[in-house]
Image 1 (cartoon, helix red, strand yellow):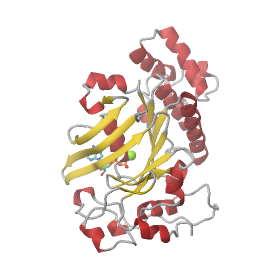
Image 2 (spheres, helix red, strand yellow):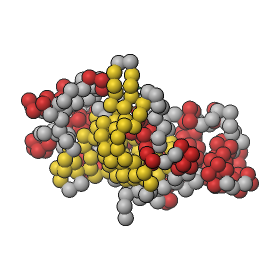
Image 3 (cartoon, rainbow, N blue to C red):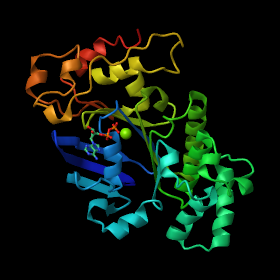
Image 4 (cartoon, rainbow, N blue to C red):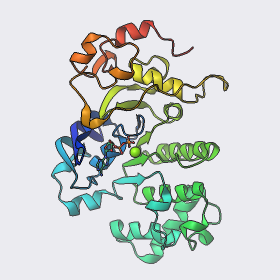
Length: 332
Ligand SMILES: Nc1ncnc2c1ncn2[C@@H]1O[C@H](COP(=O)(O)OP(=O)(O)O)[C@@H](O)[C@H]1O
Ligand SMILES: [Mg+2]
């Protein structure tokens, strides 16, 4: 079976006062039907821009997709008209964003947020849409759905609002859900509940997911594969297990030391990734991680390492990935 989504050499740029920002600088990856893929990286690494590019929601100006292909379910999304894209958004691709307070409409009831999508994409009548809305709220674990339908977003807790977002995303039986930092605004216990819920529902309905997060600690349980982004590029990509237990890029190793992990003692020390994320308007021809990298050698300043296989299905963009394997002090 072909992948559900294939992103090929995607480039998205912004023209800003400070200069040209190559927010997404040639990323390629695939998502198989029903598969959950995580995109991980620090703030500013291009995760959201990469997702918004797939949905063709990049504000132009200042942004523009300048190159690449986005093949989704047999269609090249870059070639679709805006009305065709509107059909795909919300119907074939569901979306869950970080702050449901801004993505839910504050003046519409919970019920209306859901029925609006159903009426727009599936042409169902109001009564059928209401019945489906109740069913969806039950699915996402909201008690007393008939009463909740009549409430407004501000009457719900953050966790409940995120459940509503998931209900909206699932309403039209999408093939893919893109969740951009879906739990970042929530406290840790609720985060786990929401991620569990997404995992259960994705399995049950065979929906593929792209989960975007800056927390590499949470993804291992929820994603089959992980793409690590740095400065607009994928610097490491592979099965979650390999990324977790045998990372081959110094940035991934640093990220792993910076997040709480479920497979390590709770008191293990957390180190923030040293140094600052790069200024994307001032990248040179070398590896963008070089100034923060304790493994850097001269070559790293001269050429940009390509993303290359280090092992079956595991890729890394680092000239020193072989030496890194020997030096795995990530467990320390
Ligand atoms: N509308 C915009 N105008 C100018 N620059 C933008 C815009 N949106 C994003 N960027 C830039 O693109 C880069 C990547 O941003 P983003 O994808 O939001 O990062 P992440 O989601 O990984 O935190 C950042 O340098 C950001 O400043
Ligand atoms: Mg973001």
